[in-house]
Length: 149
Image (tube, rainbow, N blue to C red; front, side, top):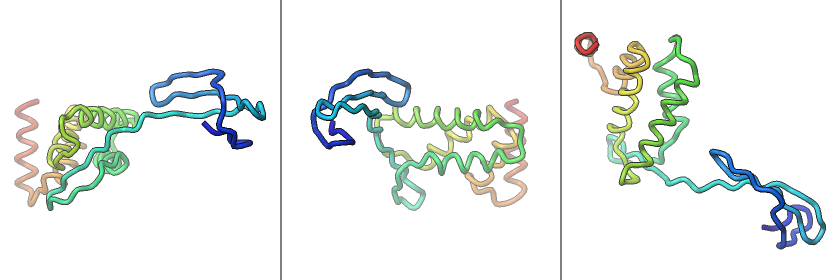
């Protein structure tokens, strides 16, 4: 690790602390003796989403969040609950055997979580995700929700 002050390549680690996301290391330059902090994070496995038109795009946590937040607008749902859903989905995706997932799978995961969290948010999401064409699609989905409780 190069010193950020003098560019010397020899430094020593004074202190190291692990957290959920990264490792914080306090370092001291062996040349100028100044101290600085570095953060190390494991490189995450890249996940690609295969869209309906068969194009691929990199999984985007913010894009997923935007869609879920839109479905939850004006609902009594804390932002932390939305973050928890996104984290759970992302962890699920990272355990799959393939780095490529279909957008349909991603949509079903979101729908499954929203159905447990808030039925109205679920219906909003499902209407866009499943491309409801008319009121009959809404009625059918609501009837299915009522049957299953």
